[in-house]
View: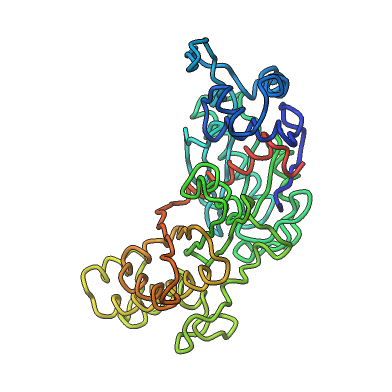
Length: 389
């Protein structure tokens, strides 16, 4: 995965592998769980589970909850995690803003905030983010229990928390992890924003229980990620926005690279607002376009429907090529899928073979706090599982 850790090691347990990893993950995602249920799920003997869970209990990752009774009548103490003992901070960067979310161990948001970025100079961004994190942590009253900070960017992230390429921020080779870890005195994990959002959906969101799913995001850009065998697929090219160049409408407008009707030209917020604004002769904002479309303004309705059909073609392509259990449509521009629900569904159906099984599609309405929560989940995964260390 592209997430990497910078700064001092988190005050945590050793990275988990094998059965210990499975025990911790089962309890984190589905706890509290009786020991008998954990053993049944993982095919472990009672003795093996006791051996594996002891260091997890000693380290504070797992705790014993209130007593209950097993079917045999013997008392049992289910295992759970103490969400409030371990806090995490997630930060999502855009070109103009930084968004922060403070969460517990199960990514429940306890505080959130945002601030403008007056400059994209890395030093100034780091200083602004550090102030934002300190303010949010203080407001949540969780000083001393923050274990790690995750920060996500729309771009390519390489080893050691280096942002290799972030078009919206105009960054190339920025050592964001080291800079922010030094400013905060905490472990910092840097990740691509779409990958972190997808992992959050997998553990705590719409993709829970899905072994094979895909995520499509629409907003400032167009993003795509998928998971197979329970793992979100990562690659060196993740974060380069390659799906944005996928052709969806040969008669569509040009993108900045000269591609006709590609995903960026049809689905990005700027593309949608530009087409509607030109036709109306004045600058329209994103929600204004959707409001007009819902009011059956002919120009806005045509722009939204055309874009929704293009989104449907993209969804059907993903369904046909990787055959996921579910496709999740998300991102700050996801209102496109709501206002254009009918042409979206028509295009998905038209792109599928007549005898193909229906493709489950879930529209997940999100804001930037959800993106920041995704960054926090990357930090949680690093802390619990040792990923990126």
